[in-house]
Length: 416
Image (tube, rainbow, N blue to C red; front, top):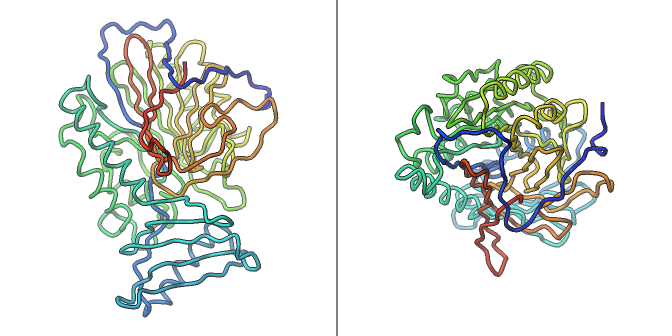
């Protein structure tokens, strides 16, 4: 199998970018737009008071096991509000390395601010997630009134919840009920013609954490089952306005290899066979654009890193790049990155509201160029992608909020 480092990539990033499709013509189709975002869950929920130390310790234990494994040695410090007795903030660090801490400040049990050391870098403000939710709702509401003026629906690259510790279903889980009440119920009630809803996610590793049967996802977005998504078949596809939308499942996370493909419903090779079939059909019917969404990234420099070569869908997507205009959306690493590899656009869209990763691992000189940060210092960047499809081409605009920037709200177009 070819090495990822030998792939041909096109250095085509600029601050203003418009993409043009292949020779596929779709004169009978309308112009439309949609939104993509991911990794929008807040890092936990801690509705504990000073009389619930045992319950809090059990919650911490579950988090540590999932993220670090049973051999990790971590210490923590707790602070309770002297008036209400509620947990006000907590600090966690590896034993013997207190400077490598994570400090979470809470409000009503939810993380409001998170800092990491050394340096007390801010990696999360709950206002970032609130801005993403509010902005997408406003955009889709405008699009419901006039599809030419705003997006019709949204995709999510995964990690919509944190875990199933408090309960799995939407009625039990504070995470799913929060997403439902603050986001999903505020989307327009009417659906785009031919679609059962306005929200279409791929499952991430957090969706399966203490919820192996995906009760939370299926009870919150029940119409996914109408589209073929089930506990044992976590992939689905739909066509809209001459475009094909494909969703895959990278599955559970193993702390020993957090970038690996953990999806077994079905397994990797079966999913690639399904993907190949759907892409072949897209060629046959002349799809004007193809959009593929899965959680773990095919290409990235941040956090856990990219999927390994033997489980990277790129090698199954690339043979279709000469006949189809293909864009891939990923998440998982809680940052934003942009690539173009062998004619395929890859976007990591992990700035939806979770704690952010500001560090990147240097890659070899022949690794595909990252075209968003371009080696510059990474900062807090909450965002979502607005994708417009027309007969003239594909336009991708990143709507972003950078709290510490002189111009905190910007719209940046990607690719040219």
